[in-house]
Length: 302
Image (cartoon, rainbow, N blue to C red; front, top):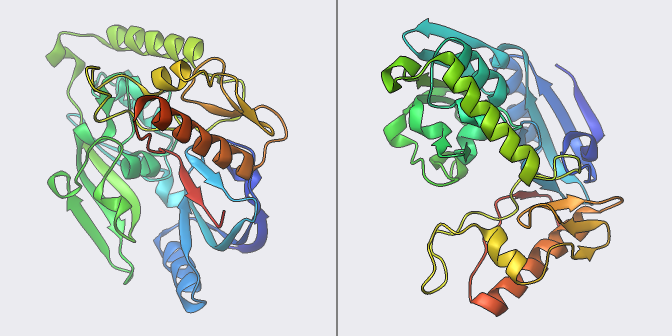
């Protein structure tokens, strides 16, 4: 394992913005991970476990700590049969979803278009098109701050809408175990699952600004809407009704394709993106009395 200094984070973020991390470690095994965590602790520095950087906004000032990525031993998928899979935190969520689908298992196939890692998906309880990663998860293995591994049963993970217990803890997700239902139990074939995924991917392509740097949905779906409106109306509706589609600050823009996406329209800074997200929150609150909560994780000093 090598630990690099002053690694530019714009290379590791889907927004293509962000300053340098003081230290950057790529770990290949559990021992590497322990060494990297000890490295941070010995220097009194914070650390952050980085997946694909697809739900992340790193400060222009960078991150005065240790960025840790997972690879190698954390990139495996173990098929135990009967829909039971143990999946490393570094595995692409899309890759796992497609592997399971090809083997005839449902439950997460509609998540194949989410461009993140399994670890990040568990951390955020990622979801799309009526499916969430936590629904079929039976256990999550983490490395605790004392260097010991611990397994959380699904009932202990506190999965909810874009949340899990791991957002409250300083533990590192290293793998997760799943029990997926056979497509046949739902009266479906692999071809049916593939058709459902194709439909989801077509919707994603038509409704999201996939050709511009972004970090997915900027704000969480509303848990309680404005008076006399359904609670499940997406934030993009209110943002669009506030007249903010296409609004720009510097190189950051509220997408003209989907109002709940902020995109790097060219030359944006992290501060541009943060300021634009705050302006959207302000304008929606003024017009509708609704508090939008940011889904994107902010890292570093803003």
